[in-house]
Length: 345
Image (tube, rainbow, N blue to C red):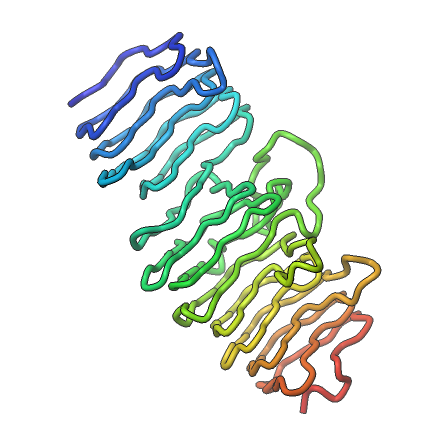
């Protein structure tokens, strides 16, 4: 199957609907498929497709990728350009696409909208920001989500990721992995990360919910990661903190926690979390509550070469929690460095 050098336009629902098709969609112009809120330039369900070097312009949605029951879609989406989509340039759910070299400008949201739980191992590659809005991405038991260096995930509202299996998010000094707010155009990385939602609204602590790990998860790794503006604002929900581990342990290295709501890292019954060469800063909201860089409940953690700066409380870990001091811990301009004050040996 080949769809090439064509113009697909003015359709009421789908410009093209590809069901279990295998082949190439290349060098096409897909435009003005915007007759209603469900109009889509290209709808691909199942199959094996190379979708590359296409121009999507002025559609309601540009490209939608899904798998129906029993489908095993394999989508390679490269070097497409998306302008003036009313909603999302790319939407995928229940599919496992590979993305590379795609660009987006002047769309309702300039990113790749992602929904659904994983049913297999999956690797996210760096491309447009991945957008998780008011939904939860779940990584089941015995499944692994791998996030490659340079990948940016922007979340909003109740947007969250729950890990019951394993997460491997290992960036590099020059290509950090970022979890942040839709409104964050900076991302704490050189050159910023672009305007996702065409607003000048500044990001705030608690713009998105959390990244959570549970008892069934394997020890997951975060290296050269930025975690910004997260943390549930539902204070009585019991789901506090931007990064949460409940009955689970993490390995955290060269990771930055900034401007999160209530806590950067929240540990509960975590038996062996390690934190090295990281920074926790600007945890100040909500104003009327104590707020923490790290809050540990009945947990054992090891901290080395880590900075706590401009937090209400740097570390809170009352008994029976135990914090092992590996050396090189710095406290700068926190209202309270530790709770209790004699926490660290």
